[in-house]
Image 1: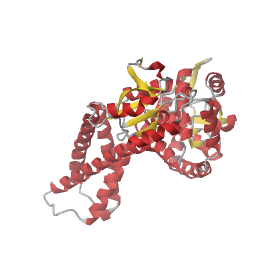
Image 2: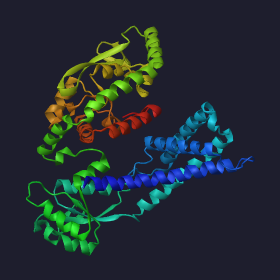
Image 3: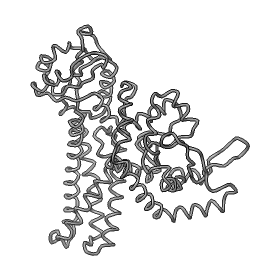
Image 4: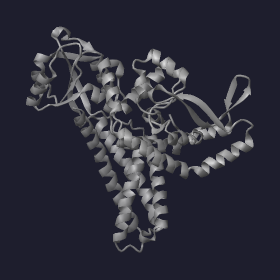
Length: 449
């Protein structure tokens, strides 16, 4: 069930990637053609073109241009395309200068950049038009009328480019027949499912059954497979669209199962090796920034350069987190962020010392953000199974950090917990690489969550 939804999303991403590659290839070909000394594209420049496609595709991913449910905002999309293409052109120009084996004239970079931006933007415009007017939408039935069913219906309805048109709900029993749930009609009971699929020409069935009711999913699946309808789980669909786990709608057995699964993942052993390798590499690369910041702060502040604070780590054990100090006390009990502190926070410079925590083993590069004991105590009282986040080491960056703003209320902590559960459920090398790429955008734009 889960794979069918992810496969559909992957196909849409792949469709955009293929169109982008075609646009980039066309732009570079035109850029070479516009030069007066054009005699065809040499073989060495083919490798340059392939490298360019890879660099631009990665940058488009970083700037969320491959997120299939992204709301199309003309100005913001143009800004994202322009920034990513400009960065890509600078990277490829630097590569061309450094590697004389495929030197590319400067005019080609100017022409190609000027062409790639409108080409890629036009692709997003056409993509938005196709899904905005629902030309490719699949008609869907939701089996269930409980909280999970109404929640997934709301998510689909509110999600841009979902590609799904809900025709109605199917109740587990006939008692709700004829009702409306959040404006969506209850069309009948499960016994009428096959005829409803035929009548409404349904292509997708979403299972959102109430776990308290004894309904055989195996029997349902058998009937649906005979009709040729695609089937997916409401939970998996919700997670794929939102990137979070709606734990309030699930039973305790789900979270207990998740906790036991996480600790047995083989990737966790590889993850420690990755932390040492990448953490050490990053500390080496960022050492000039580290030393310059250290020197500037030593000259401009009377306080300690480092801010050390207790945080809660893996298995609920406390550890000492280290950061560059970004605040100062102006009077007793009142702290303010310094101007240099604002700059450090914006570009995450204040968090560089946490690489020492990573190397020490207190933290991982990627994982749930470590919280102070006070907020952990509050969250434990109000969020069921909150200790699930302590199944892995806390991270310097994470899924919740790149998806959500800084938490300031228990409602925010609830939302971050949903994102953290999604990360724990899908923890893998590929997921960590996705988070690293999204973190690059946060650092580049100085606009973290």
